[in-house]
Image (tube, rainbow over all chains, first blue to last red; front, side, top):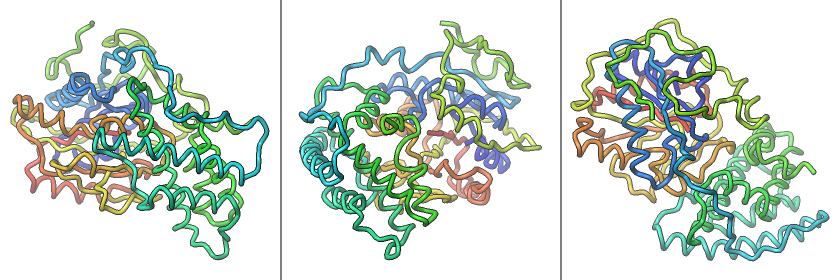
Length: 247
Length: 181
């Protein structure tokens, strides 16, 4: 981010920026930066809190009137100060708990299909409420996404017959769509938490979809194609959620 | 609350890089050291570019400035091609984009997308920027905004960023706010 600021400023365009990792900004020394303490993915702090977002935005923009730099300021508030107590996730689907012992992949896919079907119903409700979804980047519909994953972990996708780049892109973008559908579906319930960590923990810790994505990750690692290996190593399961699968 | 210095009233010639105290903060807040272990190690090992020159544009008056947003969240219109691994280009985002047309295809799975799912202003504060223009805090809002995909090393984006300068000047943009994710 700071590098882009340097390039634009070199072209005589004034820049200011949000900094999420203060240590990086201290090294790069972009012209102007406002460090915020918010989690990665939330550079303006709190969703649906226009006053808070506006305050952060003003603080970042004000830095352009400094006469000398580089400038690095700290934003004085935490997002969580106004986020309130974390709500318990009240899942809209009555999931059976994950099996104590690892079942077959067929059983996992069966449970996943049932769960995904119910979540799609809640997702349609969420769409009606807010008229917006962030899913769709894979250009596959929900059924196609489910089938892609189940077919892949079932071993029906042969490496020799696959275009590694195209397949890894489909798996990665499909995984993002799958997560978006689940998490947006959850928001259809009144009183749901906006807390990102609670929502992410719920997805990775309590859904069959997450178990399927972990199996996709594991199978990607059996391929020799570099794009598939990269997907398996980095692009499907977050580093801070791997502990769910390391038992 | 301890007041922040107002823009223009305090000049920082040297960035604060030492110590653990932040005079403008109300309390200790999240730093890299507080991240989860694997995430912290990854972020600590990320290479950061350094530059010999320090370009710094002066004389900008916010109340007269036209502002554009530049995100590295891998944002784009639904009809645009999703970002891929190693991609250095940008996507164009019209200022009047419909909320349901704005999607994200950043390759990293390691940051929280739920804020963006609930409210796109969390990542690209277009509505907030228009409000600041309406109240006269800024002079105006650019017709277009831009998104790169931040997993690509910034030095690989240099050519595209320099090409963007001419477009920004043509559009009459005075200030660009860069927003990471």
